[in-house]
Figure 1 (tube, rainbow, N blue to C red):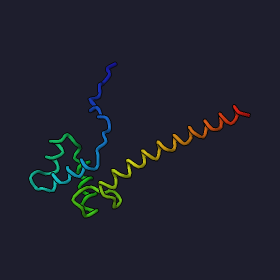
Figure 2 (cartoon, rainbow, N blue to C red; figure 1 turned 180 degrees about the vertical axis):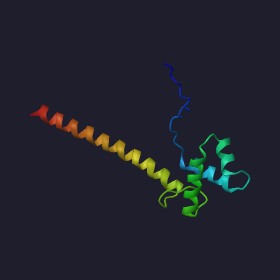
Figure 3 (cartoon, rainbow, N blue to C red; figure 1 turned 120 degrees about the horizontal axis):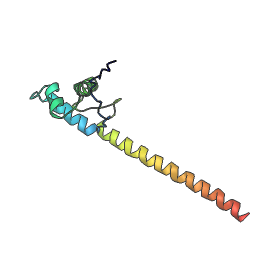
Figure 4 (cartoon, rainbow, N blue to C red; figure 1 turned 90 degrees about the vertical axis):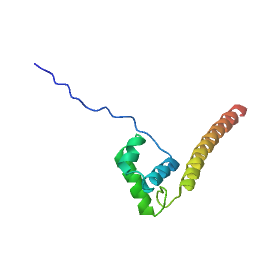
Length: 107
């Protein structure tokens, strides 16, 4: 009995890129000096991801990447505000529990 080893290419972990980085990559592709495949190879990105960023940018009619009509700076601010909102909600829940605890203690 012979077992065959499959030579599967190991998947790399999923990476997350900022909107500013995506915008820079789109600008590099649009500058005309390099093709999308050359830019993606040089930056160690998948060609399909870069093509997707360029397509989104063209659909939005901008020089950078936007999602749903939101600019890069608005996206960054929205992300920061969501993190802050999450933190404030957690703090509020802790204060509610503390108030309940101390109200029971004083009774």
